[in-house]
Length: 271
Ligand SMILES: NC(=O)c1ccc[n+]([C@@H]2O[C@H](COP(=O)([O-])OP(=O)(O)OC[C@H]3O[C@@H](n4cnc5c(N)ncnc54)[C@H](OP(=O)(O)O)[C@@H]3O)[C@@H](O)[C@H]2O)c1
Image 1 (tube, rainbow, N blue to C red):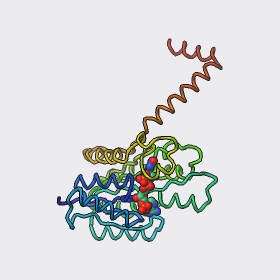
Image 2: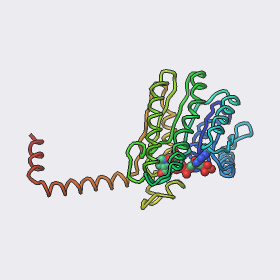
Image 3: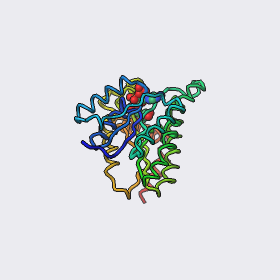
Image 4: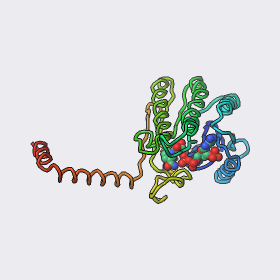
């Protein structure tokens, strides 16, 4: 394999980021993987090298750093820009989820924002100008269904993901004319360590699989340059069905309490 396209993948050591990085290697990208644990990064690299018979030149570059650290993030971005001179794809996959809203202390709230929102901001700030110079590029950021619909007791996480959606939408509009395509991916539960920590009652096999996100990325990459996809919402079938039956039960309950008004609406609606 000889790679001429460069992809930066944060969170590339585990979960969604690793599945996406693997897909990108298969699509012919040279990947630069970012996460804190060098041990997990090395395991991912080893797996890709074996699966795709990669040679030294095309092997993934590993950058072990904490995205909480503004200086380290900026230095890593500068290193990538100067070493490779181009970035075709930036996948901001790293993220953390900490439950709570007003129960959270300010430090926790700030940590969520630093990893989930400030780090993608810093990487885009460094890499978008390079993409403009090279005539185009693609950015795919992991938000969440919680970035579109907030649930109770997850306000800090939701706020960081709503923030990322807003940042992405603004940049999507600003840079489209310069050949830059920005897509935000918003899944429900995905079967990873993160979901195992707080997946509630949903069994892992009923969740979205990391490979489903990797296939979403491959689908995005297959589009012609004339297409822009602002965001993609992926829901767990079980969640959709549960919500539908709750909504239906509420509707029946309401109907039994306000029979006459309900029936008059239905009669009026059928005219
Ligand atoms: N799983 C879900 O149900 C779900 C649903 C919707 C959206 N998402 C979003 O999808 C993205 C990926 O989630 P996931 O489920 O794959 O999570 P995961 O399995 O917990 O993996 C998180 C990845 O991010 C890296 N990471 C975490 N904190 C970091 C930090 N401070 N600095 C550098 N790297 C860091 C981790 O590596 P290290 O620990 O080695 O640093 C790991 O590679 C996140 O943005 C998440 O919010 C997940």
